[in-house]
Image 1 (cartoon, helix red, strand yellow):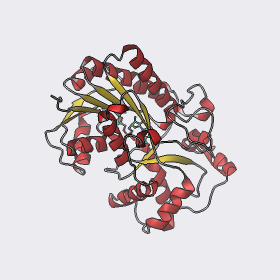
Image 2 (cartoon, protein in one colour):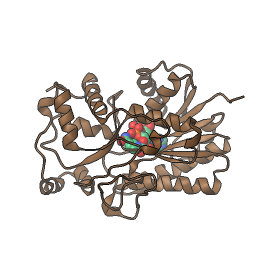
Image 3 (cartoon, rainbow, N blue to C red):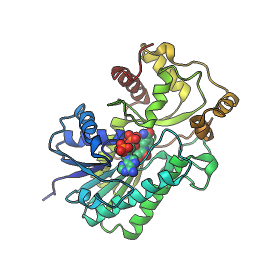
Image 4 (tube, protein in one colour):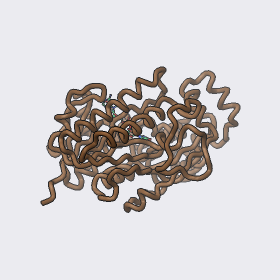
Length: 344
Ligand code: NAP
């Protein structure tokens, strides 16, 4: 007899989590999810409800990555865990620990509770931040064999360091104390796609700032992109496909410069085309502007760096992500549809 699936998704108020929850519920799998504040439950149910009927098959419990309380109860009776919760701030904190503690210690709390509850497999959301940072960019793809270097502070921010440290700690713990628990880590690129509410993930700013008229030109920044629906699909696939056990999986499409994202928007989203900048900003001007802009200053290490990744391993598990263009266009259209960005 195969045990019926019951999945815990941590951080249910999050962008990726909403789509994971919706996919699981849509496939008939009951889901438990965590929030750190009960006040988030209504918005969470509204977001998931835009994708699928979120009834009593969705249970919402309280747990915070900073504390032990709640994690054992959250894992109890679950066959699988998708651990997506982790802070992803739009501006870097002064102190790395503000991100490293919840990312690393929180992940270990969730994994320990999962092992103790007899969960079969845990899938943890890491990032290409844990793969491709520390030694600059390169023209050939990074793979799952590559690890970012948390000591190379000139080529990362606190966020990237929190992701590399957390994923490393998870694998080290798993080798020492994981017992029968299987672990998979997913390393998404920058996640785009339809937004469900005005409370969106920091990665959506990549498209929002290109269509809301707030950028004077195009800095030489770029990312490997992935659609939120595809990354949710990869999480659910990683939970189920036997060969995924104890693997690291990169989930991202081609590396795309900001000026190429801008071109896709200009050509395909006429309502905002006039607001999308055309001019490439020279690196010296971006550096000068960063003197008065702390958010930009915190991302200067990315300037001009190409970090392509290979998702061949995920594709071998049957993962077929949509084209980057579709993710970019759907992000813009959903920002317009929600009234978050006004037409030009
Ligand atoms: P998001 O919408 O900001 O979701 C982050 C989630 O983490 C929220 O539910 C948040 O809860 C929760 N969280 C943060 N600190 C917490 C704490 N101390 N205790 C409990 N929960 C906490 O971001 P997302 O894009 O969905 O990101 C989800 C995961 O994907 C993260 O692990 C992120 O690093 C990873 N990732 C994202 C991207 C991307 O481009 N978006 C790319 C690669 C990897 P609140 O709602 O209460 O704040």
